[in-house]
Length: 490
Ligand code: C2O
Ligand code: CU
Image (cartoon, rainbow, N blue to C red; front, side, top):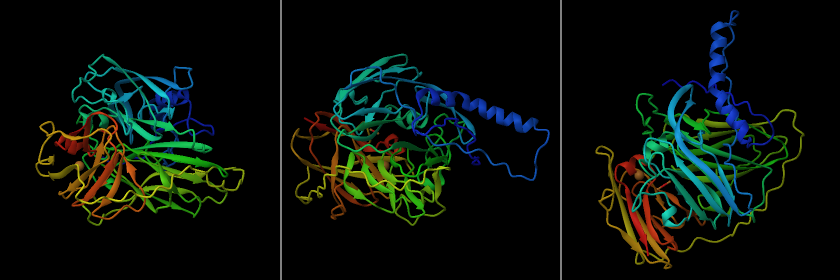
């Protein structure tokens, strides 16, 4: 498919990166019409200007619309979520996909640490589905998996409810036929604010998804490509949209990679200012501010950044570098995911000072060594057969390993395959103790960690949430190929 630039025009204005639900609803509804009108105009234009190249209008980048909280109580967030078929446009082509509440990405659910969340979920699809809360430490019955439980049948309802004692950028997606259901557009962001963290002037929530092998004839649409640079990427559903920053403002960027298999290797070109500084990853704030030249987001990874915009801001491109899963040098040109420009007619305000993030400054926990290993998972696979195994087993024919509730434990991941595997564990956070015997550069606490080819990663965790927790690679074709197991905490 040739990559036409997106011509969808999001007509929302204003200074806030988060338009109201109405604005986005309107833009989403009129999007298809705007497209039609543009087409009609160019067909009926009696005085074409053949010498001028036609510049497709570029979409503006806004955060996905947020879910409306129906409960006035300050510590309860009550939202409605409906999964239903939905047609939307990707790179100039209509996709017969699925969506939560008629938007892709789905509505962002925003709450505060300590809040109770109540989600009235309704399944308007013709397929069974669930909602899984990725990275959140929810009770097992609320985890949205079908291990020991039934999915929500077509026409059915389920109330997901839990209280969260954690903060950060998370997301939700189905956990039934996940490769296909997520691919069709079922995903959304869930933000848990920490009352102890400073509030940036603006937040920008960006969701990266790849549509590189989208094939209108195949229902699942593809997503089998792995090297991010080869794929068509959307940022909040738009190809290479534009975001306007104002001099003098601080911006918190929350980024999520929801692609089935594509990696995002984020890098930035900038006129020196603002620097891009990472403040958080999967499970909330990092122990310290990290200024790295690039950040890799494996499928399901998140990262938060702070931008401090000054008057000399020369613009910034957020790029996806070519990325090789096989550890080989990667090829090709970087792909621009979105661009940031200084808003015209700005105030010339100086860049704000850094925000006072309450970093905990903790050092990595020392790896106690190979003698202390509670569970060992070996990843094998064969791209030719499509079988991907953990300890030689294909889900659901697996052996359940167990950890004791409350006893700090070590899980060793041995990747004996030639592909990287982003390992994800439900219901818990874990710390990376070592990779090939080396301690990490700073304390890394995650719910998904990308294990490079032929590497051994050792994770430390406190199993504090009883249940049968799915443990799997988050490359969804690998899950389909069997790479999932269950870690029991009892
Ligand atoms: Cu994001 Cu088991 O998944
Ligand atoms: Cu994998």
